[in-house]
Image (cartoon, rainbow, N blue to C red; front, top):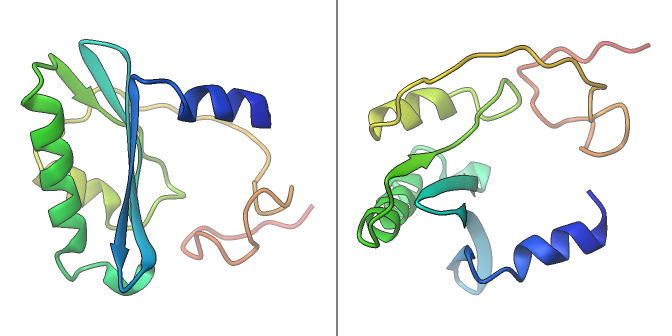
Length: 129
């Protein structure tokens, strides 16, 4: 998306963005998109690789759930894909999310279009053209 589109989202008062910091460094990110209230999308959720499996994601998820449900949301949802961390789906299921749909999208590999580093999602084979 363009910088202007991203700016519109980031500055929308219905979108909440939280950075998880440790020792002055960003270690995680949470984006809650309430533009379709009372449905809220978890548009972004993640912690740095060194914190995976150490409870930091659980702390961030607990914060997200409390934030969304305490304000009366009716639906809290997210998208995940094969480019996410291999344990992401299990993590989301553990926290009560349930699969709603499954789809196949065909798009250029973002590692080949320079939208992601070539070493991103190492669990997915990189198929050179």
